[in-house]
Length: 345
Image 1 (cartoon, helix red, strand yellow):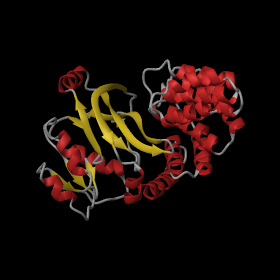
Image 2 (image 1 turned 90 degrees about the vertical axis):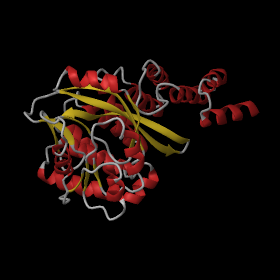
Image 3 (image 1 turned 120 degrees about the vertical axis):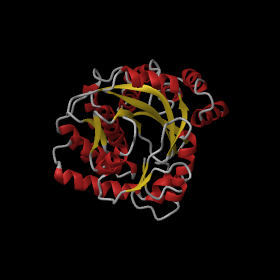
Image 4 (image 1 turned 180 degrees about the horizontal axis):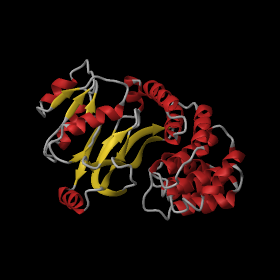
């Protein structure tokens, strides 16, 4: 782990992982709070690293300190709540050149209450073959620059780092923008950097700046199989929706063949069709969302899809169908509110 001023989160992280790993390596990049003292309660392997605006450099320093070849990388604002040691052992012994993807659950709030975002992130790997690259939003890369394969592993962690109060406390958005803009000066043809800068603007609801950077990322060479490519396209769609550029957003339909089985992509396309009054296509797309077992945004493949179908039918005056879909949404607040309104009419 690399840490800085994480006294509020670190103990929760360490107490959840301490009995599941052989050793804990903590690299501190300049804490001024009680972070180092808390770390020393769980491990004697606490090191200092002089911060140089380079996350990959700090990550690589941390993994060099590990006695074993296989390393699991965590952040202080992540708490592992599921760890299947037996299956992890099988994964480690299967192929040294695979990278394991843990499941991360992000909590956030919007106008309809608290929600969860699910994602897979590359975190378990053999340091003989892999290292980190990138001064911010660092990525695991092969040391011999070859492409590599990833496998989902049985580790789940709750992530609280981007809940609103944490963002405000750590000023992550300002820091990220500065580092990304610095990185882009060195690598102006790197689509990943423009994607991450777009995501940073998106988080502070500067959708116009997000749109500009997402478009730049898409203009550059990008392999649709890259793990960030799908999120880039979906985030671009949401930026255009927030900007009410609904007609322009229809251009994303050119990616439908690539992501036709992805619930989150189908959902954003359904919203785009819905906002262009192409209701038949919207209902069909929301229906396709429900064919997927997994999704990133909680509810996209279930109650959120049903709710939006209900909205369409209500707008079209087909109340019986609207009620049917609202009832499928369980305890989703917005659906319950619509049922109350319809019942009172």
